[in-house]
Amino acid sequence: MKTAHVLTILATTAMIAAPATLPAQTATAQSYVEIEDDALMVMPFNLSVDQIDDYDVIGSTGEKVGEIEEVLADATGTPVAVVIETEGFLGLGDEDVIVALDQLELVDGAFRINLTEEELEALPKWDD
Image 1 (cartoon, rainbow, N blue to C red):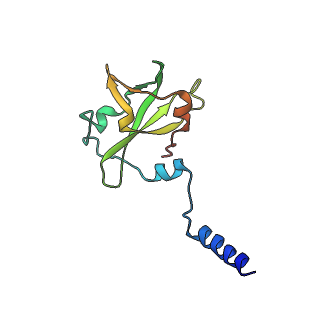
Image 2: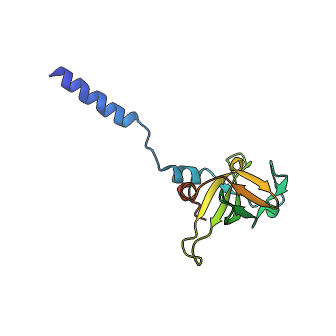
Image 3: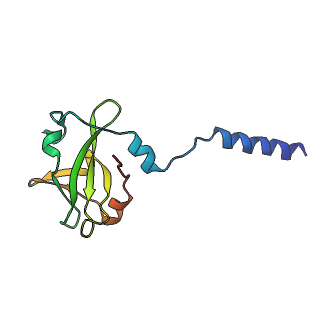
C-alpha cells in the first residue's frame, strides 16, 4: 500500500515540476521583437534594416519563395532573424514565417534559403 502511495506522490510531483511546454512556434515568435530602427545594421550582411526590407528570398529549387518583410531582434536588440512573407497561389495562403539570419545567404542580389517547402511551412509563424 505504501509503495502505491509513494508512486502516486512521485508521479504528481513530476507533473507539477515539469515545465509546461508551448508549441515551438509560439515560444519562438514571442522571443522576438520587430526592429523599428531602419538604420540599424544587420550582420553578417552589412546591410541596414531598411535595405533588407523587401529583398526576394529564393528557395532550394531556385524559385522565389517570398520576400523579407521585417527584421527581428532578440531581447538584447541584436538582429537575429527575419520575417519572410511566403507566396501562395494568387495571394492566397501567404504566411509570415520566421527565419534565423544564419539560414540566409546573400547571393546575386537575393537571399537564398536552403529549405524545402515542407521545412518552410514548419517554421514559426509571425503575427504582427
